[in-house]
Length: 174
Image: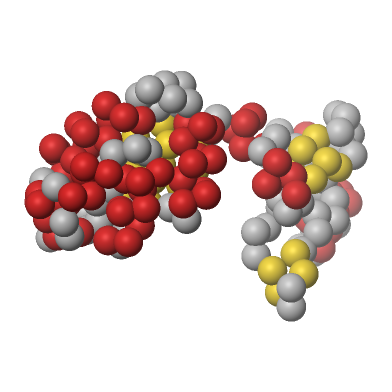
C-alpha cells in the first residue's frame, strides 16, 4: 500500500508537479513512450537513455533522482513555455493556476464552464457543470438566492401557515 506522497502518483513517474521558473507544471508521462517524448521535448534525451529510468518501474524506484534531474531542466523556463513544448510532443501537462487564472483560462472560456449571471448584488460568475448529456452541457438557469430569500416560500410549502411563519420570524428562528 503506497504511503501518502503529496501530489505525485504512487505508481507512475514522472506524474505530478514539477517546479518551473514561474509556477508548477503538472506533468503526466504515464507510459514509457511519453517519457521518451518528454525527454526529447525538454532537451534531456540522456534521461531517456539512462538505465535507471528505462521503464516506469525503474523510474518509480528511482523517483528522487529523476525528480532532481527534471527539476534542474524545468526550472529554466516558464510553465507556459514547457506546456507548449510538451503539448507538441503529446505529453499530458497543465500549469498549476490560481482560481482567478482558471476562471479566465482560454480553454475554460471556450468550453463555457464559467457563466456570468445577473444577481441582486450585481453580475456574478458561476462555475457550471462539466458533465455533458447527449453532447449538451446543462445551463445555469438562475443565480443563487440571497440568504433567506425563499424562506417564506419553503416554510409555506412545508405546510406552515402565515401566522406560524410570522411567529418563527419574531422569535429569530428564521
